Image (tube, rainbow, N blue to C red; front, top):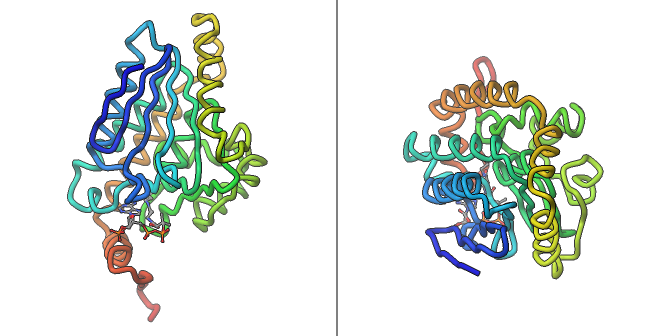
Length: 259
Ligand code: COA
């Protein structure tokens, strides 16, 4: 077993599986540009190496991930491009990904799951994609994949209203594979990753490729989302939403003709 401690990401390698543990619990594992870059590099390495069969992603502390680090995002395009590089890497990754989700999965903490294969959730898991509340549009092709996965009406509840989905509803909506007691979650995910690593690699890879189908519409949607997301980041709406978050107050969005 090899353990590497990065800034905010702990990488553990064991028997054909690379584990990426989001390790910034004081900020609910919100992802900085450095964390994104570490994960993108790890996915690249996992893709290249013949002795790596699967990847496992988990979060340390009580929550999976609070999404993009909002401070990093505010500080310039650097954070944004690291995030887009990561979502492109996970969307085009060619080996199975197993995830263990406990507590909050916000923004990319939820949208990345749409590209993973086996998603195990603790009963307290809550999935939340509040892009619109931040004056932003969704990313990681979630504007395409969420309606496809769960139907427009459920996706609208998440992407238009920004309402959280609990573990049971997420299970019903097809976002998670199974709900597992919190104290068994990581062990369960590890056992499933090990089970995948024991399969015949070629048949496994081909089966997964067939299941994923044509990635071209997903890549095209990510490009469109990325263009709109960058535009939104410059908007007065987003500025107000981000400022309100750090001032710990509700945002005030004004509209022409409305007081
Ligand atoms: N970026 C940067 N910091 C974040 C963060 C994020 N996405 N999410 C949480 N944090 C920080 C908080 O600022 C706080 O830091 P502080 O202790 O220095 O004040 C700490 O993590 C704990 O968060 P807090 O808001 O006190 O916890 P909570 O349980 O009341 O609420 C959330 C948790 C996740 C609902 C809330 O933090 C939140 O809405 N975060 C923003 C999520 C988001 O919009 N992500 C981007 C989606 S695109």
